[in-house]
Amino acid sequence: MGTSEAYLVERMAEAQVLTVKLEAPKTVSRKLGLAISEGVEKAALKALGLIDAAG
Image 1: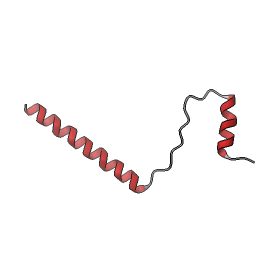
Image 2: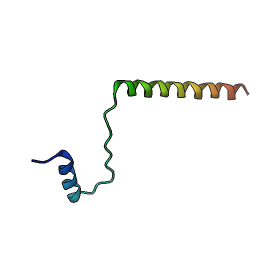
Image 3: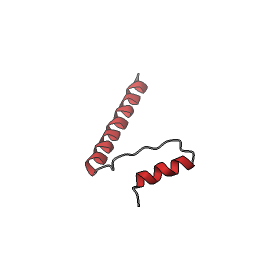
Image 4: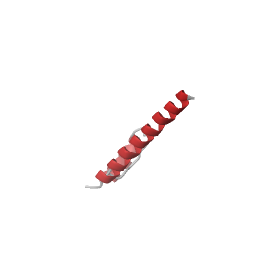
């Protein structure tokens, strides 16, 4: 018996691996922060577009 990481390392020796990236699961607060950030970015881009169009 071994860890999932040891299994993956063993399998990597037998296969072509392009990228392996481990990330911590996103918490509810992190998801909310990302959603708010995305909303602010979209609003700012829309405002800049309207300002540019008004010239």
